[in-house]
Length: 432
Ligand code: NIG
Ligand code: FE
Image (cartoon, rainbow, N blue to C red; front, side, top):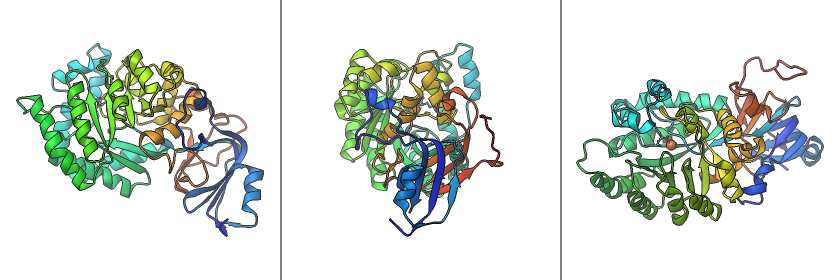
């Protein structure tokens, strides 16, 4: 035990540790256990969790050590910082007109075909100065932090040429250096086939022969992702790009079966991808294969919501089949313009019938696996980063049920208070 404890957070009415079964993904029944401790404390030193348990257990463990800062959670809910394992958070402006067009009945792919969608953002991102792109992205990340997100994966993919993809990846790297969040970079040159190529195969070749080696050489990405979709990249192209990525030591991810079924989930399981993401149109066979694999099923119910669609990924079937389900926002300017993990959790509960405990585990513990960060964060466990949210609620089930409000009172990243609501000293006997 060190002599000085940097932070003691005590008096949590409900602490959800989200602790897991010794480094294993949470599946089936295991996803239902949020590691709830009532009347709990967390002790932090060097940015890491030193002890977590009941107030009595932690105070016994600390013995006579002196405490630099003490925070009283006042009976509120405390849980791990959200891990958002799938975003496109670096972009120019929102495409809110397309939201209205979809409500009026236009489909996502129709909007793409008439020059909207990803292509429109690509044009803008190519033109935008790198410093400006960084600054707007930095502000967007700080808003995510206010809602409790302390770790985020960000994909490139609004460049679709080497120069702009590298620009995006440099911005993503700076966001990791210059905001409190942990940022995990993914190269997604295969987000669309850009205009200007006579033949899509030529672009696939450019991704494989030029972009992947250059991004690997620059050391700017940890994962590679492909939008495997009708009219975008087919199954064969997806396989070729991911195999090339694997040769350059990228971890593999697939945007799979989002709008139409192509078999991306089966491919993800076959290739041993770290995650298969979206899965709205996944097949029975795809569900079975993910259930028998370590590929994390990253579900993004905020996308169905943003697309004004009533079709959601079959979360219950995936959980019943033993798949390791995680949740993410898909934060992007078009299909999913909300960066709020609590909103994602709320939609996961009401529309995909995940229980609040399953959703919390999926947005923390399993989400950390989906980006290879599970040894470092995703739960409040001794030795992991002290990434903690204090919520102004008395029961964690208020988070999804009282949707549309930011209940965060305090967000702690690596043991430091990085965001605190003004006037947070207001106390009440009943939830506000
Ligand atoms: O995950 N599916 C592809 N990419 C995003 C959409 C990005 C955009 O519309 O700008 C998605 O839904
Ligand atoms: Fe996406």
